[in-house]
Length: 176
Image: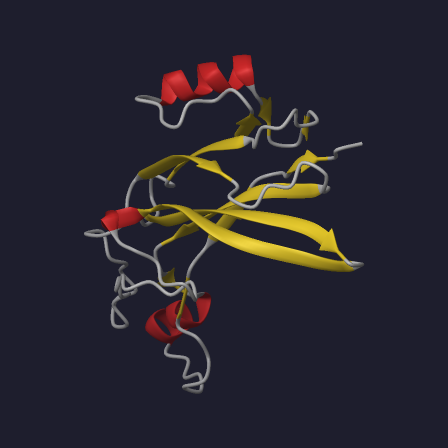
């Protein structure tokens, strides 16, 4: 993930994104320079694990302090399968795990996702941080593998699947 004030709205290749990020922006873990009236753009790219399921979405999480209270907002900035995410964050994607074999769905999701996103509520006078989170499609949880391989019986309330997540270091914005 990179952030900067002079990034384009879209890039046609990974190479052009990395070049622009390296030359015109700061990388994750860095401090964004003070805004001169512009809203920063965040450029993010992710690729799936070669042996794992496809990616579901990329999110950017913004954090800030308002009236002494920590606030956080999650933005879905890249979503697989050209679908819409509901306001509550739910998704109509149904990518089930085979409960008998533990196999995950390989027909949905995306092997890689990328986006350029601009914070619609950026306040140049407010400290904030931004980090990216990538969510993959569901896979078998260790409890399901125990049931399949070892014949262990867990209560129905124990989850059989999970959605792995990865996240990057934040980009910090301090107007002072």
